[in-house]
Image (cartoon, rainbow, N blue to C red):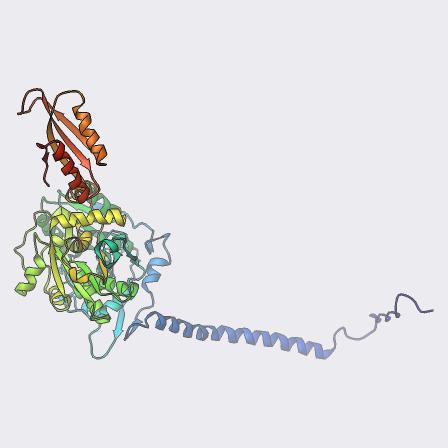
Length: 562
């Protein structure tokens, strides 16, 4: 019978047979297999760089596809490697490591190598174009002597290639700030986009020009250090970025500088020295220290390098908002942002209107354009409010660019600037200073009716306003906007008369902020009381309705004018 378990199994081989365990041809096959694996490994290691190089080249071409010329690195380390690769947590695209503390007793020793530990890196970038100067030539022409105190020797008109090189070089060091559609658009009858440059780490657009300026310095000068003498946004940007680049930085401020500014500058990493009672005294002291110690004295000038860095904001704005009709910039004496961004925008689209806005109290730019040269006879009596826009015109380079590329320059009142600060705080939750709000003030004042129905970008370039000044500005703006009103009237000093007044205010939906009664120093009849009320209203129409209701009931009511 056949077994139900299936066919019989094969008998196992006898493993006790004599002879070698593995036939000779098996040894040859094993050796060949090992040789093939080794050969494949060697070939892979040799060709891996050739395989990655086309990908790297393609990425570079993809990043620079909008430029007509090609940008090449002359030295291997890039700005991203310097800022983003080592040294602790990343903050604002930069190294979070705190630089070594500065000892005042070693003020003259900061040129020594032991402080920097040889950690300063520099690099160059070249613009390949036809029969044109290289951007690095502007920096190489700067005299390399310890007596040099400024960058005025590298002044020249900037080109679009200069701005493109600056954008590539500082891309890892500054924020790409948003440009957002504003809720103010319906109120002013146009599409308004706000470029929020006040969101930079130091609260100012000046970071763009300062970072490009510092990274373009020679390595020897980076070791020695830089020095500035002011409390402006420019000094704050120098203090921060020089510390992040491990460049020794000194800031000379007058004794009248706000303590908050001094504290902030020290927190950025600079050594702050209080000297003199005026800005001129601080500048003289800074120049003397620069000459004695070999530091580079920096001031906000219209050098090609600085203007190219500021012009990167125009490039960024053009990419963020398509089909722009006009861009509004703050102007004034320091018109580097206006000039540099105009050079970028007009190259990309000559049909974009570039408009500058300055104060009526000191129309420095308008007078300089009319005279054909920078004017120096304008004095600002309210520097703490206007900030950098209140300075003198600092160079013919930016003035020449402004006269050639800017379509219009308008002047606004101080009241319009205050109201625009209020509008930005209410509608955009943006706390800005006068320099940041002056662009919107042109629309508040109705100075640009030709922009109705168009697409307009407004540059909000600065947000460094001190708290006590902000409180005064907002209180004053509410009064100018008819949001806070005050009136006084004389009532009989009898029970119930004051309550009747409050009933009228409640009926008109006016909120009482303050009420005072004066009985002693009253020139009217006896047994009367003078009542002074401060109320909050919705707008100008609501304030007019309240005034009519009060005059109807109290004909002698006196309305406090603004």
